Amino acid sequence: MSDERKVQEVLARYVRATDKRDGAAQGALFTPDATVQIYSKTGPDSYEPVGAPLIGGDAVRYAVENFMAPHPERGSSHHVTADHIIEVEGDRAHMNAQFIVFRILSDARPADGWPVGAFGAQGTVQPIESGYYDTELRNIGGEWKITRHHILLDMAMALPSA
Amino acid sequence: MSDERKVQEVLARYVRATDKRDGAAQGALFTPDATVQIYSKTGPDSYEPVGAPLIGGDAVRYAVENFMAPHPERGSSHHVTADHIIEVEGDRAHMNAQFIVFRILSDARPADGWPVGAFGAQGTVQPIESGYYDTELRNIGGEWKITRHHILLDMAMALPSA
Amino acid sequence: MSDERKVQEVLARYVRATDKRDGAAQGALFTPDATVQIYSKTGPDSYEPVGAPLIGGDAVRYAVENFMAPHPERGSSHHVTADHIIEVEGDRAHMNAQFIVFRILSDARPADGWPVGAFGAQGTVQPIESGYYDTELRNIGGEWKITRHHILLDMAMALPSA
Image 1 (cartoon, rainbow over the protein chains, first blue to last red):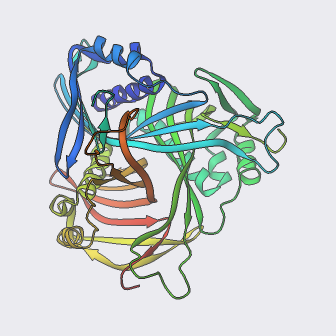
Image 2 (spheres, rainbow over the protein chains, first blue to last red):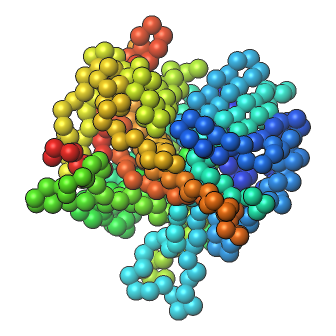
Image 3 (cartoon, one colour):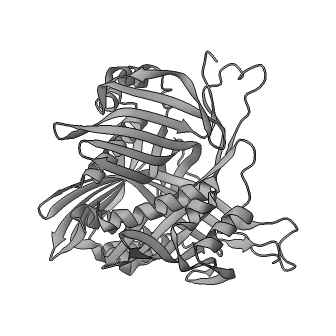
């Protein structure tokens, strides 16, 4: 498999871990000294950092396990990435990708069954977040690990303490 | 072209065939003994099968031609796939991908033209379904064919007989 | 990097240039004699051209700079492409891809801060357009350039003069 595809699959695993709130899987994608920073867009070409950076895979794991809102009953999510631009130079790589986050809520099957005429998937799929991931990786013993991850949100972000 | 890309393009052709309701093109992507099963999510890590599996490309073709709801006038759809994880081993491959289905309905041009100030695409694009495709393929004479296809819906699914 | 990936990354740069309204970056992806034509869907398998074709990268640049609606304050967009089918033959390539356009509008942070309980991204993400890009490219001195670009919109399109 090409290095570019390997790098892209790191992000494919990242979004699955995020959507499953699987902190261990998420943290394992980062080096111990990786920096992770969320940015919020403030203008056509400007961003401001949101909160402090996370440092290292263990901190990522902790954040996923403790700070991400759990899915409600019958709820799930998809972080979809697209249009990756990937440059590999030796054991270093840079990746930029678009992302859109979808929030899914399945309907509950009524006790007396679906109404007459209901057909197909029952529930809602709603896009709620978007932006770019800008990510640096290093090949360590044959495995690509994230060393720096910037989440460039298109939108303002509210934090509990803000 | 790399085997990973060839495998991914099978899914790219699958979604085009689905969106065009082209049963012949859809069926041709499967082996005669392929199994296709829809699953509906019942919990964070659990699914239940929806209906019986389809067996073989001809059954897929029949299902597309007879069981998929046709698009309404001015309607279309996009099954968008993303974040593929693909493993190829010899003549076998496994692919996992996210999908989001969008339903499109174009506005009809008013008899007296678009209203003043109307500019750009006129209509609605709505996400209606999501989940994962989990797919096994086999290289047969140089062509990758689907041997097993699981559609893991995030949502409950209503069938006419349910 | 494989030619298929290089070709796909041309489209990844195209969507970034479009979303940034960066006419210079957009125009640079096309040859001087490239033709660009928007089509609007008129039936299950039929399209009609919308307006006249643009000819050449400079015309593309001019169109981006003068005809694309600027983003409103706190607004942005993502043109997301997916499910590329790419064929490379020598110095020629053909690419077909799905696209979905999302319009993003960030909320403004209230003067007295976010309301109690607000958490996460604040704003709206809305799919507004979709279709296929059908694109021909030529390798010129090691760089893939677009020679023909068809934008096959799923929807009717209103032009100021229509």
